[in-house]
Image 1: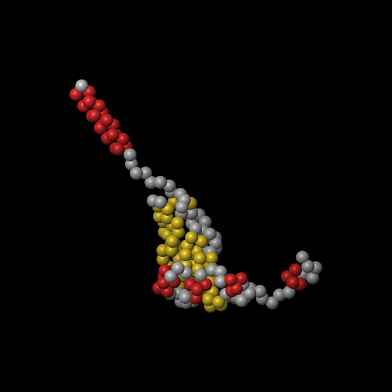
Image 2: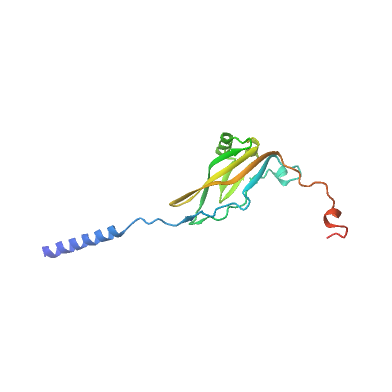
Length: 170
């Protein structure tokens, strides 16, 4: 009887050894960013929006188009990583503005508030973003540029319906 109990115990121990030796931590999901890009990789933002624009009356932020070419296991998260500046931009002021919550990246959209835009000197700001999900992370370097200007050009211009549609109308 003692031999039978010992054999069962050793068999169970051997079976557990095989089970634990065969188990490995396999990463869950995937993240592919090789083709990540914005359809329009430049956003023009202005300290003073055009008086005729809806942005001037409702205070809407400056927003990019959604990023394309990123796939992976949901949820896929985006965050600001760094900035490079040109033409008078100031990286320290950009970082401070971002930390104050005036720039955020959600779902691949970049949103810059009007107040945040006014905090920045005129210049070009090229952003790098970090994209990540469970177990994976990638840096998208120099993926988007925000060009800050003083006053937005008024797009209405001087035109008449006759010039636009012709004398016959539409």
